[in-house]
Amino acid sequence: MMQDIHHRQIKDLRISVTDRCNFRCTYCMPFDEYEWIDRQEILTYEEIARLAGIFVQLGVDKIRLTGGEPLLRKNLERLVSKLSGLPRLKDLCLTTNGSLLVEKAGALRAAGLKRINVSIDTLNPEKFKRMNKRGDLARVLEGVSAAQSHGFTRIKINAVIERGVNDDDIIGLVEFSRKHGFAIRFIEYMDVGNSNNWQSEKMVSKKEILKTIHACFPLREIGREDGSAPSVDYEFIDGGGDVGVIASVTEPFCSSCTRARLTADGKFVTCLFSETGHDLKALLRNGASDEEITERIAATWRKRTDRYSDERLEAMNSSRGYQPAEHKKIEMIRLGG
Ligand code: SF4
Image (cartoon, rainbow, N blue to C red):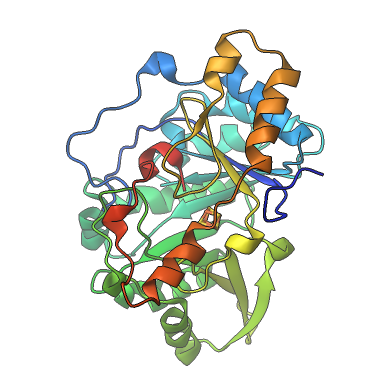
């Protein structure tokens, strides 16, 4: 069993298939000008599948496809079909902004995709457009319902809650999810990347989110899925489904973090807040054997010490406070969520 310095196994792999996105969400992709990764540097599906196979051999049993917006990558179902055949892989999911789901849901399902998470931060069409500068809410909602008709169950809605922006949308999102049978996950606003201008005052804490929901729809805690999922889940006492909160800022979960990331250009990254990654593409393209690549990944993981969110909370509670600008990170658009 492969463990890092803090005895955490590698279990989950988040694969970013492209850094391109058709939205410009302020908390993730706040740039007007951005230098996209050169197309030749992007891993091919064959390269991704080979690396994924090696990660699975090392203990990964859950893969999530992300981006950028993963559905912008042509024929993503080709990759899904390669990955869904990996022995010992228990879960294969996709996180998307939903804008292309109407077109893609059927092919993804047929290729073996198991689950879909869709980011919807508000149900107000104007605010939706304001928050991501380009999106059309109606199109996204059509996409989610297309996914349901193609047989996806347990669809999750992800919502990042920012004070003064969409904290008044919490109940609307809960009602929407309950009505359609979706699971909803609220995410504390975080300092991902270097440019989202994060301030702790803008973050709505897990405690506040739960208090708001509990006042309308009483809840009971279930806990973390598999003991290591980022979200702490709650069920509605009236049986109307469940809701989760990912509290990376106020209740970090680094001690149980089993997540690794692979960027679209082949960097192996061991934390969402890492400053750099470890280049696997160079190994692939220089003819390294599976054994050599396995050894590089294993050696990197065994040395892993990441506990960024724990450290952020410690700093926030110290007299000096937490200074986001002092921490250089890979941009979220490159890394996926
Ligand atoms: S901050 Fe890094 S180590 Fe901690 S939970 Fe997030 S990804 Fe894992």
